[in-house]
Amino acid sequence: MILDLDLRFHRDLDAAAVARAIDRIEKRIRDEHPEVAYVFVEVESITRRVEGEDPTRPPPPAPP
Image (cartoon, rainbow, N blue to C red; front, side, top):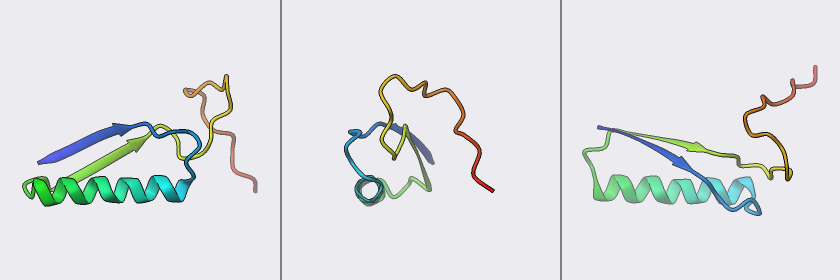
């Protein structure tokens, strides 16, 4: 079984806090539902979004 989650976290959380929360969520799912073979988690953003920013706009290119 595959589980796909789309999560949104409070924008004031840093990346480490979001990662810890995802780990807890995945562990609980696996503990309570061992039939779940894969858990895919999509997070809106683990960085703080700027007010008014278009979330559908692709990120800027990485510096060389």
